[in-house]
Length: 214
Image (tube, rainbow, N blue to C red; front, top):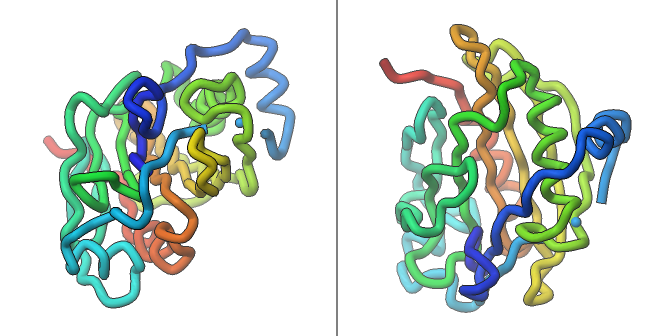
C-alpha cells in the first residue's frame, strides 16, 4: 500500500471534492456509511527491521512526534511522508516505510469552519462516500464522541475500505476541537489490515493528544 497517494501514481488515491449540503445532512443522521484509498505492496512495506517491528506493534519501540497541534507516538523507523503526497486539507504525515508504505498517519490543521468535530467528521465521511480517495467501498464501523486529551470536544471514527488494488484496508479518524480557537484538527491513520493491527492502532490511539505549540 502507499498510504495516501494519488490514483495517477497507483498509490493511496486523492480526496474527492465535497458533496452537497443534503448529503452532509443525511450523513449526520446516519450511524454507519459506506466508500477508497489505494494501497501498495505489503510484502515490501519496509526493508528496515526496526520499521517492520514497529509496524506490527509488538517489538518496536515508539517515538513521540508532533504534527501541527497534535502529539502522538508512532513506531521508531517510520519516516516523514513526502510533501507531494499531502493533498487537500492534509499537510503532514508519517509512513511506516520510505518505499511502498503499508501504513500512513497524517494531520489536517482544519477540516472546515465548524467548531463541532462531528460536523467535521461528516464532511470527511461525505468525501469518502463520494469516491476518489476512498473509492466506492468505504464503510464506517464505529463513530462516536470521545474524550481526547487537550481537546475541548472529541470525535473518533473507525472505518474500512478496499483499495483500488484489492487490499483490505482499515483506518481511524480523530477529530479534536481546539479550546482556544474552536477549530477542528483531524488526525488520520490508514493502512493494510494485516499491517495496521488492532494492537498497534490502540497503542497509537492511547498516545493521541491535542497539544498546540506556541
